[in-house]
Image 1 (spheres, one colour):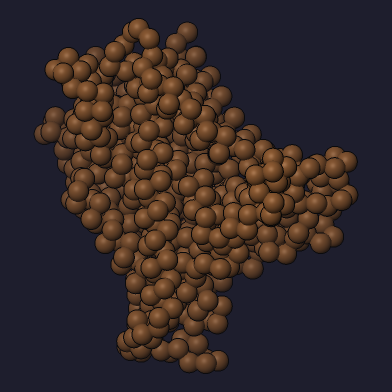
Image 2 (tube, rainbow over the protein chains, first blue to last red; image 1 turned 90 degrees about the vertical axis):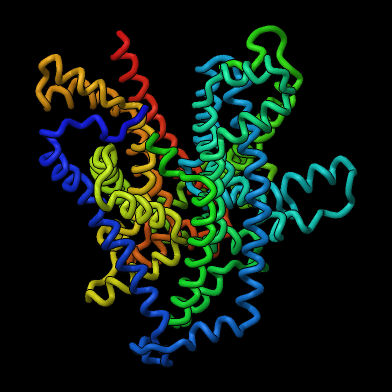
Length: 298
Length: 275
């Protein structure tokens, strides 16, 4: 399946190289103007001075960063974000792995597998905010779960911690982001040659041994991509945590949001830079474990 | 698709995982169906079950706003924006996908920039684009800064899909076409496009819905006039009536129509090809 240009003929090399650069130009232009320059400006602004009523004053000061590091709230928010990230990562991985495994190795009819896969992906195309809100009538004080439990006599007072708590935040994250695990893992697993599994069984591997020694290593690209998505989505989230915790919990971005409300762009930018560095470090760590690009173009 | 013992009775793990899958689907769809039902709530305006005196009054409320804000206007901004993003995403990521089939100087840098653009927190980029436009002396609006913000997120997605699609396009097919005397244009038309087309529809679907539902990247970049997700967000804080659910039902229906169009066109193409 090598699609690398080793087979290219020498004669067409010059013109096709020019062509290649032309093909990649639009992407590069968009990324430059709407990603590289904006991020560079965020970094620059993070060193600016903030002055009441004036706003941005171009300068090179570290006060924004020092402010943030000295402020215990920053630490609380980042720790809370990391906590959510870890919990959600574990849950979505376990769910995503086994659901993908079920679809690829247990459903025997290809059409049925594709159909079930589509059922998993359809909600992704609908509004995240609506899907988040849809938990309110389920988890609320007078919601479905509480009223069902009350009716059944299992409890005599509605459970308070179902909504507007860390629990409901995790439920919403898992609801929104498990898909980002299922799709890449499914994609990796679908490429595994089934005869490998049979060979492993013939060689005396147990069912669990096959999963652990064959399926898991061969789906690591998908797992890495899924983890990348889930980590960055949870770390960058502000809206789910705000709505689902009822404002009780915060995330790293809540700090940024607050500063923006007071038009304190320099400190918001400094906080954004810190968040960005953490996210990029995690991404780099994932890329170190798995060379995603090599596996993708393979 | 068969597990290691290809035939014979299903292993016990099948039933365990089938149960897990069923529960997951209920978890995925249950709340959405609840919202769908509750959007037909009667004048009691209760936000929870049971449904009393079903009516369409909250849909009426939505389209004839007295309290709910400018939903219709937001819809007429979100729809064209999603359309433009879809078109540009297909054009740009398909051409870029072809460029990445060979190794060229800078390819790694561009690839990692695209990945970084995908994973940068939306709010961070939102600030950056706002500041950029402020320095350029431009005011933010949905068709300039908003469009760019959405592209910064839909293009890398499109590129990743194109990688998966083009991985299946073996260069020897094209070489075979050349060897049989096809011109470059013929090869593209008769060999490349048919293989790539379903992938292009997937990219289009991604482009449309990523833009149509995008919230964090829109937040600071669409200017004074809200797109639909921002309007919904405002409603979640202001509106405490089932009109919110009615809006949820309407946007979900629009999403489902788009998915149905995309999927049925893929099926149509496949059927046409096999006949």
